[in-house]
Amino acid sequence: MADGGDMDEEAMRAFFPLSFGKTAARPTSAASSSAHSSTLRKPQNPSNPKPSSSTAADDDGGAMIGPPRPPPTPAGDDDDEEEGGGMIGPPRPPPLSAHGEGEDDEGGCMIGPPRPPTAEEDEEEEENDDDDDMEDDGDGGFNRIPLSNEIVLRGHTKVVSALAVDHTGSRVLSGSYDYTVRMYDFQGMNSKLQSFRQLEPFEGHQVRSLSWSPTSDRFLCVTGSAQAKIYDRDGLTLGEFVKGDMYIRDLKNTKGHISGLTGGEWNPKSKETILTSSEDGSIRLWDVSDFKSQKQVIKPKLVRPMRIPVTSCAWDHEGKRIVGGIGDGSIQLWTIKTGWGSRPDIHVEKTHTEDITGVKFSTDGQILLSRSMDSTLKIWDLRKMKTPLKVFEDLPNHYAETNAAFSPDEQLIVTGTSIEKDGDNGGLLCFFDRKKLELVSKVGISPHYSVIRCLWHPRINQVFATVGDKKEGGSHILYDPSISQRGALVCVGRAPRKKSVDDFEVQPVIHNPHALPLFRDQPSRKRQREKILKDPLKSHKPEAPVNGPGYGGRVGTSKGSLLTLYLLKEGGLIKETWMDEDPREAILKYADAAEKDPKFIAPAYSQTQPKPVFAESDSDNEEK
Image (cartoon, rainbow, N blue to C red; front, side, top):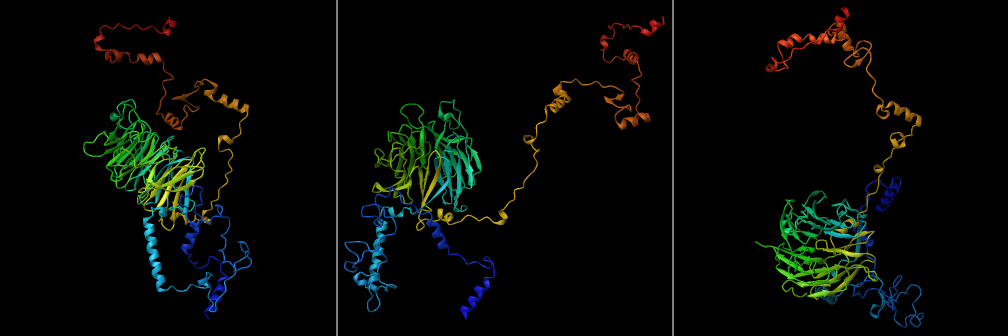
């Protein structure tokens, strides 16, 4: 009866549309597995120096094409296999015993479910598991590198030279030689992997360093200009630090850097202090709450008093020591304490033959990494800095932002390499063992682009690497779904939203060809000349005189151009007598008053003034 009810329900559902009713929930595991299958890494030529034995290869050493061969059958079982030839077609099933079970004791395949293990086999499996765990713990971190999957954050048009991931691993910043900073959010991204904001800190200046604050609410942006900028978490500008006066020779007397910046980092313990290094040869500490003043100016120790750029700088894990890579090849270290100055506590000369592109402290404060453009990575013991513990060579580096980083447990050291003109290898990530001081693995990131910045985030256990050239740049993220958390795993399985009917917008067609002067027809020359003649400015026509009766400059037939004036005149309130009077008589009317009470001539001069003699009128002469 139950089967009949189901059949009736299916028959009724056939009459409804497909979207009717509650849809069945899809299994999330299947969806996530399919999403991660699309991001599996392709095998790279520069593989690990210790390849696994499970890699399928031919007898000649080449990679096998197509499905794997069937397992060889015991000799003498099949007459078709002669001289070691492969069997054509599917393998034959093994002969069954009287009980219907495969001859597993003799090496045949067993058909059906396996037998339940005995108590002795359970004990052996537990011992083997314990041995495997001990082997994994004793390995040098090789099995813990997340390398199975890869995604690329694109958007930049040139080399990606700066990278920063916040402490929670949810927001990524990437800066490039195309003068822009792009912001990515794993929680808001889908499988298209698009940035949600793009910034241009300084027009025409490359982005060289990015650093998050300890609370991840702000970040520092260092460009090729002399002023560093502070942004909030959403990319809004909070302020920029002041620039110094380039005509002051002593750098301690300038209010800020006077040349382009080379690096910068936020104090890992103090959210109000940052560190910047510059080409002007100084390292400066800044207070984020006051953008117009600096806390400390550090001038490295030099053999000769000249300006040598500081190419890199870094804080230690406690925020109590500063290290700087100087342009003369030296590494200098300062300890922050009361009354400290520019004199370094540790000064090692000629550590590298070319510019130092990156320095990094270990968490325990015992190891210092230095990466240089002389194709080397050096590991230093801070307790004895005279000679390095190890020098790794043949690591080409052509970019001033190439760095070195530690793994989350700091048992591995990772750095990137640049491509060479005649070299066969592309951009690589090289992993080194900290204890054994040897190369563990080389991972190919890009066959044509160099690897500049690298970072291994401890919280999400994912490896970041930036690449690029003159035309394109990107940030590669390596992860493993079995050992990584959040980060790239969140956005890879999130499909982009499908467009619905509500998203459709009708673009109206506007028919108004003469709305802009660009689309208007040019008038004829005759009309242009007539228009110019009517314009008094272009034709230089003098103004015509005012003629006819009027009042106050207005001309009209009704003795005034306004109706109000006409009514006042007709009512007798305005009397126009000035047009009928003689001007001479109107002035002489005030002669007696002026003589008795002179207002415009001082009384001191009234006695000495000559008596005016007025000419007789012409009318009197005519009468005589």
